[in-house]
Length: 388
Image 1: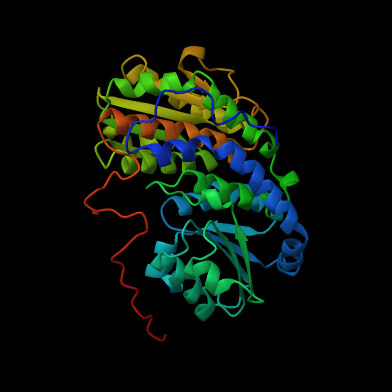
Image 2: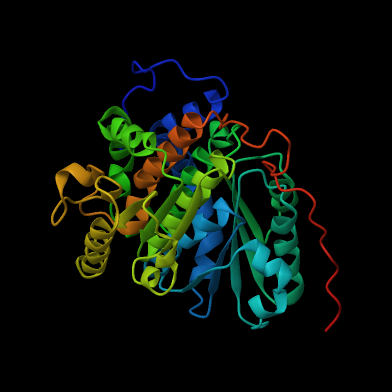
């Protein structure tokens, strides 16, 4: 990856209660370079672990996590399917834990369970791995986590059926919301079969650095300054999953003060469009795929006609077909696969959430001071699965 711009570029003082989130958004280009360096060191051992699994044409790869970690799997799914030539599914740990027999119905099918986890201590993450071992005849585990001391990493480390990939230590976000942790885990996953398979990864750090140093931050402030009380995020394919993560980030960092909805560009018309009011802002992630892009552009035009001027933004790796004044261009990503484009593009959503939080007097490092929502989920009872 290209060298990132320094994180110490002149910026206004960071407001109280935002230091972690502000730093963790801005450090991502540097951490992505560190992530690639760590993966290069692991390459030989990782390939040795994966080679016999990927050699089996019946292999099923399940990408799993909860919340933002689940979106990491959803964003990566299609790119990893194309790179490996194997069946790849994204199933949240919450779904696996609640309905494990449906998720693991083919007992005799060899499976690689890829677990994404910032802390590795979420009850559903641990339960999902145990349920997979119980219900499947052959299950291997790849754990991608930010926390070497988490229960998931500790429990799977050193086992013949498991491999633990750690992201850089600083990626274990100290702020409430997952920012660095998401992107470092996603980049790691996209590199698992070898980076040459996913186009555009080499430009991600430069793209993110350009966003952080360019006019997008001022445009984000302009969009959120009008205090829209609803946001819509839309995309197609991998970018539909990015839309889901973007909506989640906004609701998290504003403590639920801003309602956010995510959908696919085609799916939005089938009912969810009722969410729109004259106080709604919308962001459309525009695909680099020429065919898919046409549907995204259609939706951008439709929303532009439906909402007040300046309330509809396109985030895109290429400018063609889009108005310059309403497009946040992600430079260096014009030829990238959408899963790679999602890496720098998600910084736009993180910045929107940060600005919206601060403009409402909320402290984004801890938007739920009363503890009604927790950084690591609490209050989950894992019930024993009866024998079938």
